[in-house]
Image (tube, rainbow, N blue to C red; front, side, top):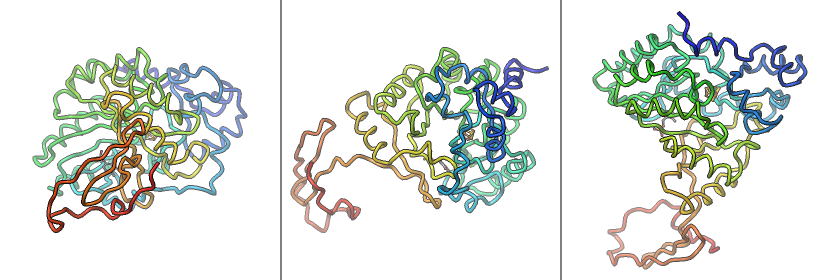
Length: 367
Ligand SMILES: *Cc1c(COP(=O)(O)O)cnc(C)c1O
Ligand code: SF4
């Protein structure tokens, strides 16, 4: 029998005609954009839109600007080069991404993986067996991030088979699930799902919220069920033009996440993906946002700001510079409010000093 969330999903806005009618757009243009990257919006998420072009709208409603492909790359993070089998991305020494579903409840127009997501030919159920075999054969993998697409698009039974198979691998210590379901289709998080997930601890869930308006009573209910199942919740946010490229919006989002027991984990600089130039913003904007968080609000509300390096270098943390100068005698530091402080160095013999990354060896321009 179909569950309520499956029925809700079926009633999502899907066809170009439906979407064009709902948002008063040109159906032909919607069709054109949809040929490049699938369009779908749950009615629940569409109901959060307050006005045309607002933060919710920009994330999911197709835009002609997506047809502009002169900038960006199809696979900006070169994930395909780190993919030994189609369902695995193995970039770091001890952990892998395991892509188990090509489906999402709604499709983010800025998706990094849009070359694969929404396409059943690219992430296929039969690839799951190969992924499990790869993880079994690689004893260095102690952390598996179940991702996609959205893994919670699978029914409870299919998802459980995957989690159970992973748990049976002795060297896999922790499991993580990356999902945007609590944001797009919170009704999918049921007591039954939470009870099933609870059997596979230590299990972490990373959710994806980009704007404070997404944290509704329905989302709070879903997150609460997961947290009550003992699942530590983290959040990943993508910095997006016209969505959250504003320190006050980002601070409100981070603070609101903590009230629903979600710890902000990453803010990502938007990846260099084809057809997303209208949603990307500058790195300076991200640094300004981090400067407006650290010290001004709870440290728990301050995630890492990272750039996932084009070409496959992995996530690189970006910090405002707090070190003004550094010598054998002293370190000059700037605090969150811009005041200067001097920390005297220990009087070690020079050869006992650890190697300092070269960028710190240069004097910083003083503010
Ligand atoms: C983000 C990512 C991970 C996980 O990174 P953490 O910093 O451990 O959260 C692992 N593999 C790939 C390919 C990733 O992109
Ligand atoms: S939920 Fe994640 S995988 Fe799905 S479209 Fe959005 S960014 Fe891509």
